[in-house]
Structure formats: C-alpha cells, structure tokens
Length: 241
Image 1 (cartoon, rainbow, N blue to C red):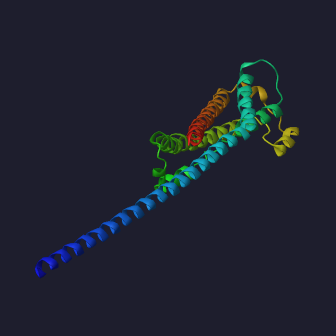
Image 2: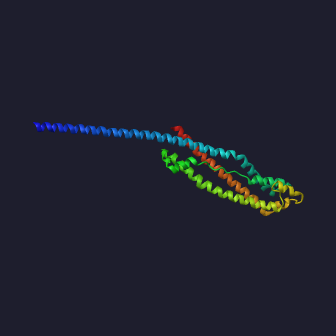
Image 3: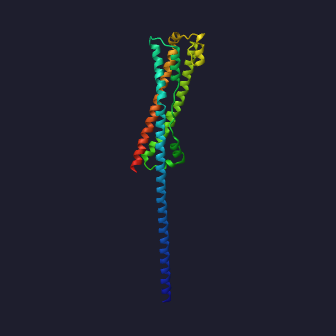
C-alpha cells in the first residue's frame, strides 16, 4: 500500500513538472512571437522611412535637371547656331561668334542623388523592402545610374572640354575675341571671320561640340526618366500600404 502511494505521488510530481515545463515553453514561444511581431513592425516603419527618403532623392534629381534646363537649352541652341553660320551666307560679327562659342561651351549635367539607395544596399537594409519587385527596381536604378550613366558622362564631359579647347585655339588663330581683353585688341588685330567660317577644322570642331551636347541631352533625359519611373513605382507602393 505504501509503495503504491509513493508511486502516485511521484507520478503527480512528474505531471506537475511537465505542466510547468509546458507553461514555460509556451511562455517563451509567446515572448518570441511578440518580439518577432514587434521587429516586423519596426522593420516596416524603417522601410517606409527609406521609401519616403528615396522619393525625396528622386524628386531632387528631377528638380536639378529642370533647374539647369534653361542654361543647357541656351547652350544647345548656341551650338546649333554656330553650325548654321558655316552653312549660311549672312555676315556675322566676331563678337556674335564669341558669344555663341561661350554659350555652347557651358553646360550643367546634374548627378542623380543616390545617397539613400546606396545606404540601403551597403547596410543590407534593402532586405527591409518586402516587395521583391520594388526591391529589384531600386537596385537596378542604383546600378544603372552609377555604371551606365555617371561613368560615361564623365568621359563625355572630358571630351567636350577637349573639343572646346581645340575650337578656342582655332578662334584665336583667326583673332576672334574670346573675352573683354581679346575684344580690346581688335583695334590692332582685325578678326578674320571669313577665314574662320571657311576653315574645315573649325566646322568639324563646332560639329563635335554640337554632337557632344546632344550626348548630354540623352544623359539628362535618361536620368530623369529613370528617376521618374522609380519615384512613381515607390509612390504607388507607399499608397498601397
């Protein structure tokens, strides 16, 4: 009888112990679930902040290109006008050639704002963007902007400066004034406008500047197009949340 009683006590203790262990395990699982739930909420909040900052960066890129549009448009027009001077019969003053040259030489190719996108990739926070399509668009935009637009445009700008320098030397050869000091020399150095307009190298030079500027146009059009497309996708994703 005593043995049986002891057995019942032992089995009861085991039952209580098992129950207590089960309660502890369930408590741990609940705590882990709550932590995971909180982490998901925090991650979603950070992801939203990234999205909004990305949208701001993209708008800044669009704004920079729009801001420089008048300057670039004036330069494009000047380069085209320079080319037409070689093809026309009308007389032209040396100061006009000088002014057109100055405008055709000047440009501004804004760099896309990539800070937020780069930070997301470098820190690994890009994983917080749960939508795989949106995440892919962000990484593609970053890669395209850096590798296919920025690096080529730097090379194009260097070549543009070379074209400008070459044409400046030709202008100097024909005594076309390149500034106020040059203009003051006209009294003793008469510009040879006709010689300049009949110089094949000069014509090739202005054509090179014009084509260079057209390359700039393509660059600016593409970076704005890429920025606008991604911004619209991000705004749609943010609005769907």
